[in-house]
Image (cartoon, rainbow, N blue to C red; front, top):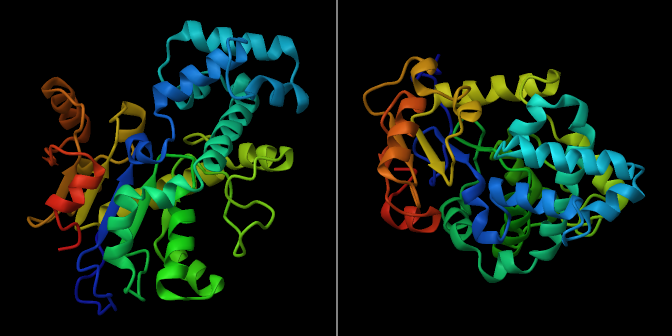
Amino acid sequence: MRGDASVARTRGAGVKRRTVFILGAGASRPFNFPSGPELRDVIIKDLAGRGGIGIRETLLRLGFSQSEIEEFAEVFRVSQIPSIDAFLQKYPELETLGKTAISYVILYWENTNKTHIFDSPDWYLKLLLAIKDDQNLYAEDLTIISFNYDRSLEYYLQRALGKVLKLPPAEVNERVDRLGIIHFYGSLGELPTEPNAPGDYGLNEDAMITKGAESIHLIGRNTIAREIRERSVVRCSEAETIIILGFGFHPENIQILRPDLWGGITDDFKLYSTDLGMSNTDKERAKSRLGRQPYWTQTNCLRFFDSVDPFA
C-alpha cells in the first residue's frame, strides 16, 4: 500500500516524487563492468585455463581444489544458463565457489576502473548534479535498487559529493546512506568512511574476496535475502515514478518487482525504461513480464537523463 499522501514529509529540491531506480548490468557497463553473459564467459574461460584475470589461481590459493574448479567450469558451460545468478539458484552445491569467483571478478574490475569512473562519469554525473544540493534525501523519496554487485555508484557519490560540496567523509556517507541503495543480490560489503581503509573499493585482497563472497546472496536463500526482497517490493509499491536502467528483464528478476502485483498505482504513476539494443520482440516480452507497458526512452542510461527529467 502507498504511504498516506496527507502526511507531511520534507522533500529536497531535487526530488519531487517518490522515485525508484532499478539498475541492471547495462547501468554499470559505461564503467567497464561486465554484462551477465560477459561475466559468465570470463569465469568459464578463466576456470578452464583458457586465459583470464587470475580467478583460477585465486580460488586455488583460497583452498578450492583443482577438481572442484574444473567441475564448476564444465557444469556451468554445458548448462547454457546465461547468468551465474540463475545458475547458482539451480546448483546450490556450487554456490560457495561461484560466489567467490564473482567476488574476485567484481573486485578486480572495481580496482581496474577506479580512475575511469571519474574521467568518464557518464550517467553518474547526471545523477550527481540532480541530487547534490538536496540535503534531505530519505529512502522513501529516492531509492536505488541495483541488481549488480559492484559498488561503483556508492564509491562515485562518496568521493564526488565530498569534493563538490567540500564536506567531511562522515557527512558525505550519511547523505549517500539516505539514498537507500539496495543491492538485490548483495554487494561486496559496505564502503568504509575513510579512503584506503580495510574493505575499501577495489582492494582485492584475499580477506576482502572471502568477505565479498559472504555478502552475496540469492533470492530467498536466507533471511537477509528475504528481507531485501520485501523492502524492494515495498519501495516499488510506494513509488510514483519507477525508472529502469540497463535491465535485462530476466523472469527471475521481474517476478518479484511486477507493477501489477504492487497495488495502489495511481493515474499519474510513471514507468520508464531504457531499451538500448532491445528488439520489438524483446520489448513485448518485457512488457508481458512486467505486466505493464513502460515508456521506452529509446536510449541508453546517459541520454535518458537528457531526454527525461526523472524527478519532475
